[in-house]
Length: 333
Ligand SMILES: CC(C)(COP(=O)(O)OP(=O)(O)OC[C@H]1O[C@@H](n2cnc3c(N)ncnc32)[C@H](O)[C@@H]1OP(=O)(O)O)[C@@H](O)C(=O)NCCC(=O)NCCS
Image 1: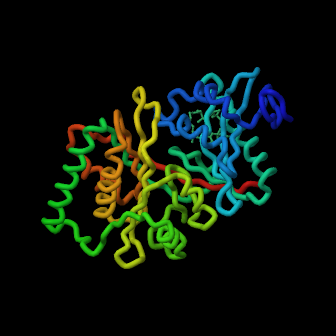
Image 2: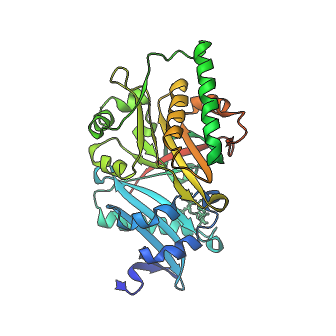
Image 3: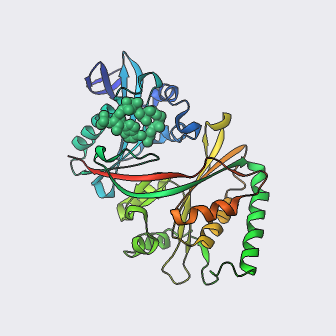
């Protein structure tokens, strides 16, 4: 049903559910204060979500006031709903509203995209077995923060440490070379290589890019392309043992306004992960200003080594201790 508030999808328990619109932005922001400790992507992404193909964003209202939001993107050739953005306004929390809006979103997506039969999501806490989700993968997250101007000396320090490690023979990865993947055909060939998942131990068989899990398949390449990522791979023998991608820096509310970077890494070679971090940070050095937060998503085996490697800088420091990204899936009936 369409009215001046937009398209209404139904009502229950005093709530009405609507397709989110551009003009709902301020109300969405009003319920988003403090989400993810301020390192929230939604203020930056909301407007592009309104026009993104195969995305449905739903809001709930009580007495006209916006109280919750959930969004689902249909990927993997139309078989999978990936849910993102879930939030409930603080005064409504703890009463099950997150469950209600998720059920409304799942139902609506199933109605519009009947081929969807899997629901996937990533989150930082484990919902427990009673939620019927299968944990497909867990990744470790290393988070760093500093002022933009301190990243130059941080990177110089990392390079010096890396050179020492190479000199002392602590690392032996000389046969591996990381290259920047600029050519979209080359990137496509690498991503669609059927061996990729097993060689890089892709988490749950997916490329998880800034919390968005995508099977490496042709129909998802456009979703990745839209994210405007920079890609690196070790292509010494045309069969990479390591790949990484980095988002462009984007603004988040953290600390009165900061930039956020996300570096997703696939593969378990510490030396390459360190090198990739250096290259990605160098690539964005002209684009960063003010406070910067970097989330680096890695296999657990690399976390301690990466953390140690980054220690000791005056300007760029670890932000948050060890934390995890969980990749979950359940059937959508
Ligand atoms: C996390 C948040 C959405 C929970 O909302 P809530 O309405 O208070 O949650 P409740 O505990 O009352 O609701 C419980 C239901 O929501 C689900 N739920 C709670 N947190 C969830 C999460 N992070 N991801 C998915 N589902 C979640 C529960 O599984 C439960 O579902 P059920 O009704 O099917 O049993 C809310 O605290 C919030 O907005 N936090 C800030 C934003 C945030 O952290 N979002 C998480 C994104 S992963």
